[in-house]
Length: 426
Ligand SMILES: [Zn+2]
Image 1 (cartoon, protein in one colour):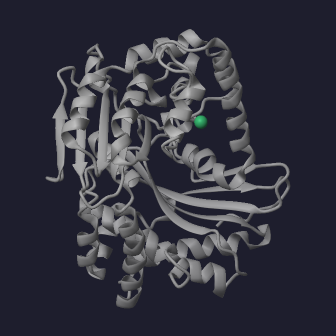
Image 2 (tube, rainbow, N blue to C red):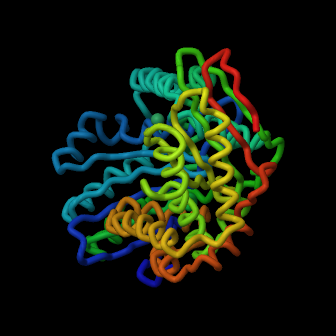
Image 3 (cartoon, rainbow, N blue to C red):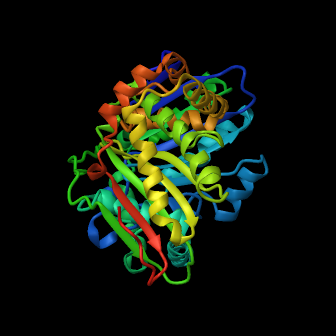
């Protein structure tokens, strides 16, 4: 991709991507491992996520408290995440602390033993996390209702974290064996963006990560197929009074979309819900219904497939059919009518204002580079601003009709509702 990003491949196959930005005050480093929850055998569902929780736990190198104190004394806060095909961790720091961060990050990857007591405690922590997620209707709506309904019979139908039962059964040895199998240099990439000494960084990485051995390469069959998609799914939940509604349509081959196609999808979201004057927000929040603010349009991406969705978090069940009708009318009108010039300008301005802030965010940059390196996307995140500025309404309409179907039958409606409340289907 971008000529500004330098790729270095270590002798053991580990890949390093360096983006030097001399104007930045700090730098960001992200380590990505090409393994995610879709690689888990069924008897240890949730193991990838537990491993993520163990990134900064006591190892043969340092005690947990020491790891955190050694980072936090320099103001560095570590983060970790698990996806369908990747596991990653990242921080931002001042350039002078980068070599020490690299050493700690190497220990995270290179550790193959853990404390038994910490293991049992952390497993309980993971179960608590799963249960807390279940209690939050707004958070669980897309991941737990819409996605399984849209991608039934695929790996996306499963929870990233596993279930309390599956997590409860995982042993420390299961976790370590899984780590040994997948945490090998050829599956690992390191991305650094911002201000840092290139020479020192490469040297530190070679002296640490360069020591890793093994040559097992994780490959997978494409398993995400659109199978068993439901048009309707209603989940009933005790203890809530409001309805949560999300409608979504799958986007095939998301990882092959061009810069322009991605730009169109971003604009689609902004045209619907980018601000208070954009069509769906205005219609739902000010014109037809009462004021509430939780209307959003967004994209999800798993590489082989993506999802475009519109959601309204929490509203009076009596307004259900009106709400649904309004959403589909606005979606359809973006496919059938040319967007007015002024609306297009507003959507572009809203999107670009946020996106330009993101480009200054070093975490965002390393995340985008990782998505590209691991094949989740094909677009160049640095090119999006230019492409959006050039788009006109006619071009938008042509492309959106290729990417998103206006036909109701291609969409999945997912609802989280209180028990015993009648919902009128349209
Ligand atoms: Zn977690």
